[in-house]
Length: 260
Image (tube, rainbow, N blue to C red; front, top):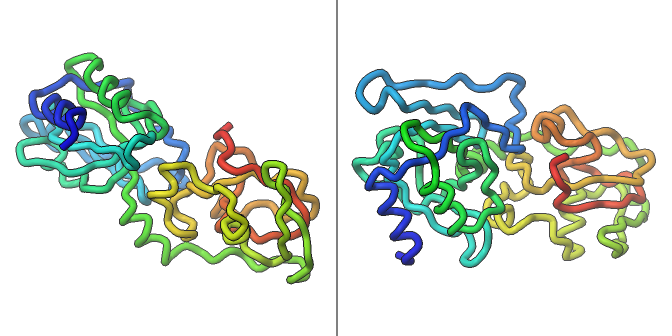
């Protein structure tokens, strides 16, 4: 175990104080449900402070110390952390909701998907005392299971196979109407995913929301589907799930767009 991981692990087990910014869970990765999930709470001892909820591939928990969670970098030297394991005696193990390979998305309502490991550790250690911590994780295994139930990309309303061009970052890609946008971008060596998305995406199943792009200067393209709108709640209408988008002509594509 790396020294930084050992240090964080010891903080968790020794009852390090963890952050709390009230009940805020705006991850920017929507499950597509219309209503927020109901939380379940335990009713005795320290478990009375524990609250859990699942929403699609998201797991939301509020757990008191000690958590007993081992964290590691998703990709060594890059932003993003995931669960390496949970141990007996911690509230994460007791909750039954936290498992290995789950990606940590939020701490106390703050997005940490772009945070380096040491910053995540510092955030946890420097947090105020006396309250449980609100955490949001994405469970890749749940995303994979749900991908089989996701709808296929809609059939195009234009003639298929007509040559067209996609402009991405100043580079022009040759494409054809009717083709899947994500597959075309990947075939053209376009970086669709950020570093965390590369490790946690659902392989085009329409579940994870990591292949989001912005489609601009795209005359004649259909608006995004209700499924996409649910998954991209809070994002502009021009942003699409590339795995659920059919190319319908010339367009400019912006990859990894900001949420607002």
